[in-house]
Length: 120
Image (cartoon, rainbow, N blue to C red; front, top):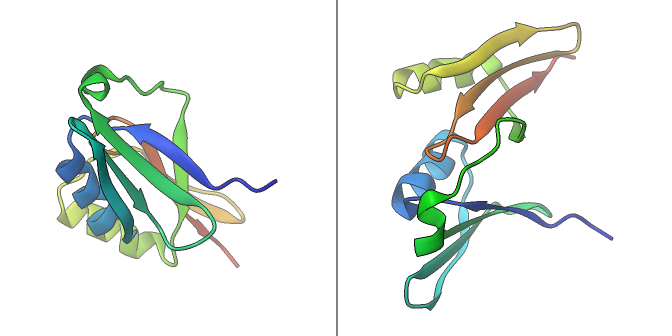
């Protein structure tokens, strides 16, 4: 068995796509409107994808505070500079430990996003 994607109900597809492409750096791999009022987009290019779903029911979706998605970055300093330049506030961090550095931001749907660098 292999984990393939995580799904997030989003309030605004365009805003969410902009965040995940411009801030996180994912590419749109598929996008579809399977029925009126429903739009789906898959992002990423590897074995694990991010699925964004926007529908009338998603407008009131609430992401729990205990949920987060983590993304590995080559340089946490570069990622921190980029989010600050784009006016994205930090949710928490940065934190530096012996083997990792990370911080959290919120996506447009209030999902906590961890950007992490492994220290070698």
